[in-house]
Amino acid sequence: MSYSHQHESKPPVVSPAYSRKLGQNELSYLLPSRARGVNDMSTRIIFRAPQALVSPLRLRIVWAIIRVRNSLLACRVEMAPGSYDNARFTSVLSRCRYTPPSSPEDAVEEAARTLAIHHNKMGPELDRDFISGPRKLSLECLSCMDVVHHGQVAPGVEEYHMALTVLHAITDGTRSGHGNLILELLGGSTSPGGPARSDGELMQILEMKWSKRWGQRRIAYEAAARRIDSQNVHRRSIGAHAFPRISSPVTKTTLVDVKFNRAETTTPLARCKAERVTLQNTVFALFNFTWIRTAQNFANDGLHRHQPPAAPRRHLASKMTLALGYGNIVLPAFIPSSADPRAMFWLRALSAQSQMRRQTQSPLLLSRSQILSAERGRRPKAFARQDDEADGTLPPSPWTQIPAEPALNTGNPPPIALLGISRLGDLSATYQTESYPSIEFLDSVDPSRKAHPPLHPQRARVFLDDVGMGQRGVSFWAVWGHFVGGLYELILEDPRSHSLFKLWPFLSPPPHACILNQNHNTGLYKQLQRLLAV
Image 1 (cartoon, one colour):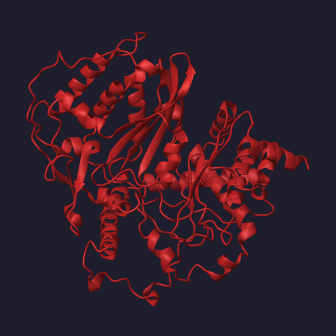
Image 2: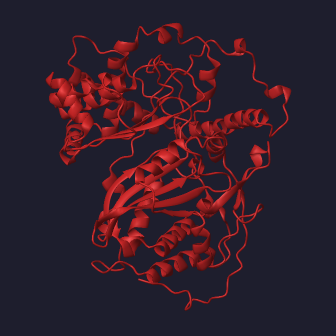
């Protein structure tokens, strides 16, 4: 397949330039991310395809299509020191306005600057570099794409790992949609059952998208760049579902991965349907049981005993004040000794479902969201000023000096180590593989950059800070063992597998990416089996 620019010699169209201020929600995500890229988001998509379908030119064209369809991906953020309320989306070529690409060819050239193709890396290295390495994004670059050639799996067919990295301020759950569209463009056809699109056909799609958006003057750029205010219900409640931790300026993130086969995936869905709950309802109940069972081991830990909820700790109090919004599910922190654990588990899943419905169906949802939006914009600006004064960007001002330790409100409990649950959902609903039969979709990994709090679960994967969960903190492997073991015990009803995971706390930590697949052929699983036999 080939494409020639020679038959397209249209004169460039001079497009108007645009800019707009960041909304309060966008600002609340942007400001805390400037130093370490907190909450930068990435999706690594693993697929196999003929080499001809994933050429550098085709990758540049489809990445240009994505960026033309989503203009904020191609923007930069202009913000003078301390002028947080005047932060604006502008062009990467202009510090005053966003200038759309002058032609489809210009869009391809612009997209190529944020596309990297690697031949000497492995796919998981992209995750490791993204999570723990230097930040890839900045105010100058809000998105980028990396593609790794992972090796040939058949004559003419290679495995690829494609990572889409986007600033959280301009995306929330849309990266998987972008990834599916890229696969559809690379491996889809113009007619059902037809061959994959040629390079020229891909360029025609880009020309159509560019003409629709930028071929003529737009009346309102806001229609292309508008944001939807967050609709989280922000309720603060005091609970006991936290873990002791230690504070450390160093972060070392480890990714732990447990895979389930098709049968192990189908069974929970069927059980949830029979119990009239959703899978995300059971996740809350499962972590409730996990915390209770783990708490039996660390309830008398010295750190926990000497840090009662009312004791102020500045190094713990500052980070969680950057919370961007959440809805709380309140569940009891104990299991009655006379209760059947399985019955209690499904009852708490129903309770989580009821609480979620009350929050999302409340007539006050809109007003709460508006109030939260203003609050989310106010807090990061105060902390951004402290950061800028600390690194010398702004001169110190007396009204932003950090107060002495006694000034903290001793009535508020400090955040210790909290578990954040983020469920991606059914991949088959996101990646519509029937639309690109020439490409075999394998998997999707969705890491995000985190701050120093030590424990970060996400989907069936958990991110933990090896430094923060030290000897004085709760054993992460105990938490993870109780979580996966509870899934087998309470949902899959597989006591054999549950007993294996009970032994997890007694093992040395597994390597960076620990995968237990359906064949149970990893060294860690065999180690568990040997311990169980003893």
